[in-house]
Structure formats: C-alpha cells, structure tokens
Length: 335
Image 1 (cartoon, one colour):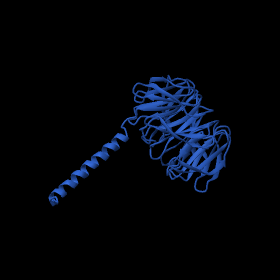
Image 2 (tube, one colour):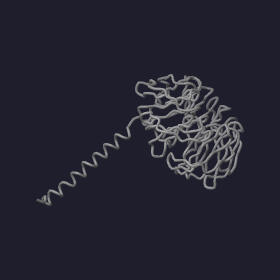
Image 3 (cartoon, helix red, strand yellow):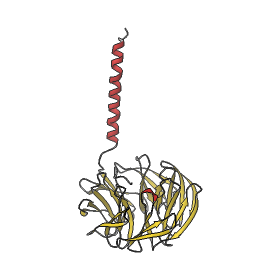
C-alpha cells in the first residue's frame, strides 16, 4: 500500500531538518569556539611542545625535525605546516590534537614561510642559502615554480593584498627585496636598518613595518617610493609582529630589551609597552577574544601568557630549547 501523499510531504521537511541539524552539529564540533592546545616549536631541540592551554602545562614533547622555526596554517584551516629549516622538510600536524599526520619532503631550508593572500603561491625564505623559493600551492600540495637569489640571510615575508608582490627582509645584507609573483622575478631591493627581520603591512597596503633587530626601532617604509617615512622607537632587538585584529594596532617583540611594544598603525606611534618579561620574546599568538597574548621567549626556554587588558605577564611555561614559532587554533584575526 502506498503512503498517503500528505504523509510523504510531512516526512520530507522533518528529514531535512534532522539532516541539517546533524550537519550543523558536526560543523560546530569540528570548529571549537576556543583553543585548547598550544603548539610551541623548540628550534634548538628539534621538538614541539604541546601545551594544555587551560592548565598551562606541557602535556607532550615530540620530535619534529631539525630547527623548526615557523608555522603556517593551510588555507582550509585543517593542517598546520611546521617548517624544519635544517631538516629540509615540512611536517604536517593536526592543530587541534597535535598529531603529526605526514611530511612534505624536499622543501629546502624553509626558514620563514607564507601563503600569498589568494593562496595561489607558497613562499619560503631560505635563510642559509640566500634565496627565496616560490611554490605553486594547492593547499599542502606544493610544486616548486621558481628559485630567486636575493641577498644575505633572507628572513621574513609579507605580501600585498592583491598577491602581486612578496617582500622579504635580508638580515645580513640589511635590505628589503620586492618580488613580482606574477612574473616571478626580483623587482627591486632597497636598504634598511641593521638586521631587518619581521615584516608587517599596514591596512590598505600603505606602509611596510620592519622590525630592526640590529637596532631599537621599527622602520616605517613607503615601499612604493622606496623611502623611509619614520623610525618608531620600541626597544633593542625589535623583531616580529602580531596584529591585534582591530586593523589599528600591532604588537612587536623586542628581543634584546625583553619587552613587547604596542603600535598604532594609523598614527605610527608607540602607545604602550609590556615589561617584566623573560629573555628574548619572539613570536606571538592571540586568543580569539583578544584577551590573551601567548609568546615564545627564545632565550629563556619558556612560553608565556600576557593578559592584554592589563598588559601584564600572568603565566610562564617551561618548554624546550630556543622556542620560536607558537600557534593555536582558533585565534584572533590576522587583519
């Protein structure tokens, strides 16, 4: 016997509702609202420390590869790429549970890494080989497209929003290089302060901020006209950046001064300092609510947690030797 038509019509919306509810629940389960696991790269130990963010304790230390320095999340936000500079490969990790899921071999000297904003290109700064490698990217599937000689000790990478230009600092030749990603050629180089490292592009691609590790300032560059606009005094060893996610402020670590400065990107002024820190603050990550800044302390073998509203260090976590990259997911926007 066939079911009455009215029953069939009533059944289909109910099934659709249940299916939609299940899919919504699965999506919610797959993407937690708050991070629970912090990943700290111990570049001197060839290991990764997995930190329980609630108890602020290391739950596990795992071997990862020689000299892990920097990390990058794949565009689909499912896989963490851990670049092993001396290991000449990239380890793949599940960022939520800290499980190593594979490796990308023969990525030579990946010191600093980055996807172009359109996710079409993956760039590595080969620190010890004085070159930049450009890979055609499909997520974690990378194919070498071009190798470009730049200057001595390429360090950090930044991009224009339209993905047409990549910028790279050279720590030992005191230069900034601009690379045309469309034609994959070196556009130009310009001088910077001593030992330039971290790079950050201000909103609207207006200025490039350069951490001058060999000095005590952030250099503001009008990159289109290749000229210095200003020096913002921060502290000795100005090194790396992490934006606050409000398109107005950015943190910069001062490695030698052992401080972190907060800069206003609109006024190009320093608006605050975080002091009383362990030695060698380096890389940073910010919780989704913007209330906690997690930091690796390169010279102290520690990671730390800073309360952003009070600008005070509230927790210190012993990790491995020479901790560098630090990551958790989800996190505050990088905008």
